[in-house]
Length: 80
Image (tube, rainbow, N blue to C red; front, side, top):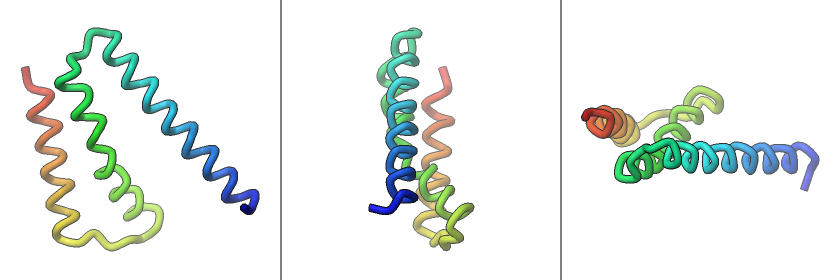
């Protein structure tokens, strides 16, 4: 494993741990698990957007549809 790959692996671990802690804190702060947990499972949409921005990957119509549906889900979950 190269030093660059090791650094990226550590960075991924740090971001993963930070996301987990944020989810736990949201639940401790009184967030409903029925809202917090589904919202945290929308991370693949973030991955697709970052791949498009940083790696220049092409967003296919099915990926675009998935991102749009994920955004609609965020809106619907955030409503009272």
